[in-house]
Image (cartoon, rainbow, N blue to C red):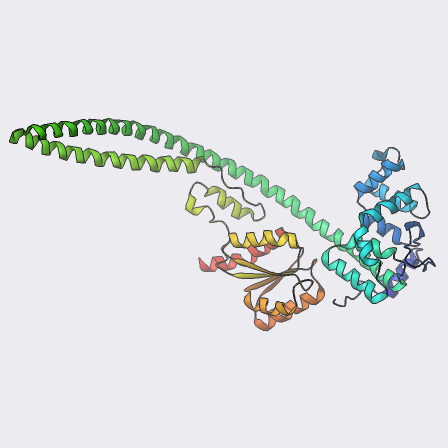
Length: 422
């Protein structure tokens, strides 16, 4: 386990908490193995517990079950949070309901942390939970742990405090991106309507052409039937051993029959080509992601032509990309995304399950390395940067572990290379 440094120093955090009238909970003298209940936790932790370990929907459900808020629609989310925090200071119906809910929801985390003893073991469990994104369960398991020390409590409280600031900053950026995406969506919808109108006009022309060729084909089939009838007559003439004049007429009929067969085959081939073209035109345009808007617009405009369907996508030209850290459920989506763009993606989890010794070999195989700064250990980030710089391989830190952040980075980095190849 990597040694994680606190997000804030112990002295600074204690000073800030003291200035606001908070104090860390004293070590409770309880039976060995007995956890502190939420009303026994003194100080500033109630706000962080309610805000981190419970959702607003869960708080409102508990309020309805206990009759705490009465008409809960009178209170906004902030007021519901504040009222619950106030009720956690002593034992009552609401605090007991919250205690029961948290113990049931995070039973697995509590069970894993039960046998931990000493600051080193408690901090190792906490750092592992942060690296794997299991912060709420680990926070509840540790904040009520019977052997929690003041140093560990200060550390985890400081980490939660700083995470709330980082989350707020990320939310503001996401709101701006959502507004921009909505504007782009409206523009793409307008262009799509124009493309559909043009396609409908083209379908009308194709249907008229198919109708004309269908009439010609029916005429050709009638001629083919007539040719078959002539063939039977020729066989009859050959059996009767007609005169030389009849033989010359037979040769002329054979030539006419061959010409008609060629015309028939030509019309059949043209008819099938036009039917296939109509089928392609009637197919709905493939849905594309709104993340790179210009690429989506190019793909929609070019949809009627099968060979140009993927012209708007970035071509990675067989490059191998390495993704370090992130969430396992997102990696499969990223691999499909890269493979659709003529590339390959290899993954290293940053040291939790994969051996760190593998990281050096994977970096040497990669043409570029990506890692989300919010879902990878500091030690893994340092190792990736050092290896990339020593091998001259570009690396790109991502602001989050979301698939959209990776896709935007791919389009940004691969765009100039694609222009150079053109």
